[in-house]
Structures are given as C-alpha cells and as structure tokens.
Amino acid sequence: MTDTATRPAEPAIRPIRFVLNGAEREVAGVSPTTTLLDYLRGPERLTGTKEGCAEGDCGACTVLLCEHDGAGGLTRRSVNACIQFLPAMNGRAIETIEHIGRNGPTPLQTAMVENHASQCGFCTPGFVMQLHAGWLTGALTDRQSVKDAIAGNLCRCTGYGPIIEAGLEIADEPVPDTGAEDAALSARLAQLEGEGVFSYASDGHRWFSPTSVDELADTYAAHPDAVLVAGATDIGLWVTKQYRELPLLIDISHVRDLKVIEEAAGRVYFGAAITHREAREVLAGIHPDLGEMLRRFAGTQIRNAGTLGGNIANGSPIGDLPPCLIALGGRIFLRKGDDLRIVALEDFFIEYGKQDRAMGEFVAAIEVPRLADNQRFFAHKISKRFDSDISAVMAAFCLTFEASGEDVIVAEARLAFGGMAGVPKRAKAAEAKLVGRPFDADAAADAMAAMAEDFSPLTDMRASSEYRLKTAQNLLKRFQLELAGEASGRIAGMGPETLDMAPIGGAS
Image 1 (cartoon, rainbow, N blue to C red):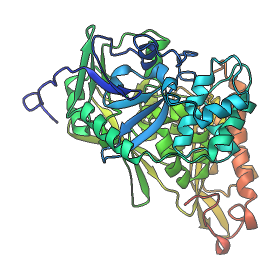
Image 2 (spheres, helix red, strand yellow):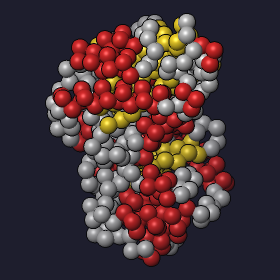
Image 3 (cartoon, helix red, strand yellow):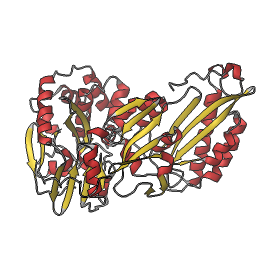
Image 4 (cartoon, rainbow, N blue to C red):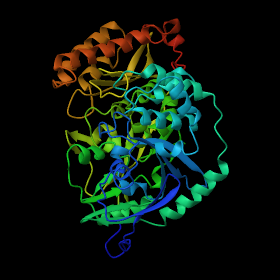
C-alpha cells in the first residue's frame, strides 16, 4: 500500500474551467457543493433551465453535458443540473435551452410549437433538451423510444401526447455532421481539464477529481474521510434535500480506468464508474430481464449519470441492480492504496447502512458471470409506477439444473431480493427447498412457504409487510410457471435424454 513517504504531493488548487454554451468559463470562490442548476440560474442568469423537484425526478432542469472521450472524440448525454455539482463540470461542456435555438428554432422546437406541446410551459425546456439529446445520440427511433427517452420528465398538465408527437416528428430528421466541431471541442475540453488530479477549494471545503485509478487510490488514501461522488444521483440529494455539509469530496466520474467494460472467460467486468446507460446493452446480453429492468431504472438523465459502483456502494436495501447481480453470483473488486480485495457481492452488504468497506477503500470494478446453458434467470421489479419509481420489491432468481436419473433437478438456487430486508438479501431457506428437486409446482410451493423464514419485511409508504412477502412468493411462482411453459416442456418433469439447456429468452 502507498505509504506517506511515497505519496504524491498535494495537487495545487485550481479554478473550475469548462465551456458553457460555446464560451469558456473559469469559476472560483463558490462552494464545491454548488449545483450546476444554481450556478446557471444565479450568476449566469440562464433561467430557461428550471428547478422543479431538486432531486432528479422531474427533468425540468435537463441540460446537455459533453465531454472528451480521451481519444479525440466527444460524448453527449442529458443530465439533471439540479444534482450535478459544479466542480464536476471541470473539463466538460454544458449546453442549455438558450443555446440550442441560438440560430433560430430547431426542427424539434418547431415541432413542439406546431403540435401545441407546451401548456403552462414550465416543463417545456426540460422536454426540449431531453428530446434534443435523444435526437443527437440516435435514441429516437419509434414511439416507444420517444416515450422511454422522456420517462424522466414530468408534465404536470398531462400534455404528453403532443410532446410525443413532436419527438416522433424529429426522429427521422438527419443529425448534422459535426465531426470537425466535435474534434475541436474535444481537444479544447482536454486542455481545460488539465493533467493529473484537479483540486478545487472554497469556503473551507475541498474537491478532488482524479483522472486515473492510481490517482484515486492515492487521493483517497490521503483523505480516507472524504465522500466519494460519481454521478451524484444520491449524494446530490444530501445537499439539495438534507442540507448536509460535505467538506471533502472526491469525484470519480473523470477516472477513465473506471469507465471500461471488459469480458474474459464468460465473465463481464464493469469499471465502477460505468453508467447504467453504458451498462444496459451489455447486461441485456446476459439476459433480457436485466435490460428491461434498466429500462425502468429511474429516468434517462439519471441512467446517464448514475454508476454501477455507486448503486452498489451506497448500500441501499431497495437498489434494483444488486439483487440481480447477487443472483448471478457477482463479485466486486475493492481497492485501498495498492491492495486489491475481491468480495462476493452478497457478502458486501452487512446490515442497513453498513457495508464491508474499510476507510480509504473504494469499489473499483464489478464482475458479472454470464449464464451457462444449464442455468435459467428471472428478474422483475414491482413498483407503483412503471417508469422512474422506487421498487417495493425487486426479485432476481438464478437456477442451475442437472440431470439426476430420469429427472432434471435444481443443482443450485440463488434467490435474491431487494426491499425485503435492511440489505439486498438471498432467501436461503427458500433456496434449500428447491435444491435436489425438479422445479415443479410442489417445490415452488415449499420454497414460497419458506420465504416467511427468510424475511420479515417492513411496512412503509410503498408497501405493507404482508404485501411484500406475498409478492415475493408470487414472483417465484411466476418464474416456475414460465419455465413450465417453455417450448417442448423442457426442464420441469423431463428426463436427461432431452436435457436441452439451450438458451431461453436470450440467455447465453
């Protein structure tokens, strides 16, 4: 582990440098926890970007965030300005509603007008920015994709129909070729970002943005009491809703080593700073249920900012992703200084608010096994609202089958839940009722009954204890019925000579 004698010198404090609507900005003297929204509406007087919820739910504050990719290219994504901290914008570019119509109305803005898609008008800038981002990134292809794109935007006047029509009208509009401009902006942003760890300070508060995992390890070792922040989709609310003082922050969103996806030997490795948007396609390739779960995971702007590592490290008992990764047998890589530790994800969560992570130790990567041919997977989210809602129950199951005599039996069962305990947790009593038996109605019934031994869920605003337990049981029954209904009656109640474990539903 890096010791004090070899630890790099503390980086010099610098101002925040970024591009706003095409013009460079250099900012100092504001608190590191100043949100991008407050800066835009305050010093910049760009009041087209609205504040609605101040927690990333309504989309009224949507802006376009551009950043260099380290290879001369440029990436664009929509984010909620209300929970993005201003120092995280160092070396990045922001475009607001005022910028996209600077040369006259765009096709989207024209379509919004012609479809009468603005009523009270408060939400309109956010919708325009979100659809604009979807158009630029090629995400708008049909009606459903338009609906998915704006799932993180709320219209209190219930004017979604005209907004969707406006989005459809521009879906086929050609995106202008901006290759030369993008390359120039990418180089400009790389220059503004600077080399090494970006360090900013004001009002007795400090911010660090390392750009490599070694810099992150050294910075965190030097400041183990710092709060790590990635997409700020959770920590942003500590400031906007809880008014917490955060005197020391380390931003991992610029660490390029943590923004990679690699595959080896049937396993996929995700850097901890990979966003949910970046992970979705790869996870959907492991099983479609994972892709569908992430389609419902918050809104587009949150998926564009929130990270896999952050979703795990915050230890939420109602996080949607951890139960899925636990069911698959996922592991995480924890780093402290030069030391690396591998932990089964299910063992990382100790109790509510407590994880197996030492001071100065951070989540560096997540390992997710691909499914074998003799495995079946299921994941389903139960919430009051389909889009952008917190789970009442999140269930994820993975069963491994083998031939035994004339039967196909469950060799291993992994049943994981969120919302059923103080941490994401396996139902081990229920699992024991399945192992060594065909996965038939009787086995499912016994496992469902055993769940009462595994869980005593809480009653809260989302669901009662009784509802949660019954729903968890019924989701296992649903899985059993789905497998029983597979083509040719595979798996349940058939002999080994027909043990065709070819992938079902896209599993691989």
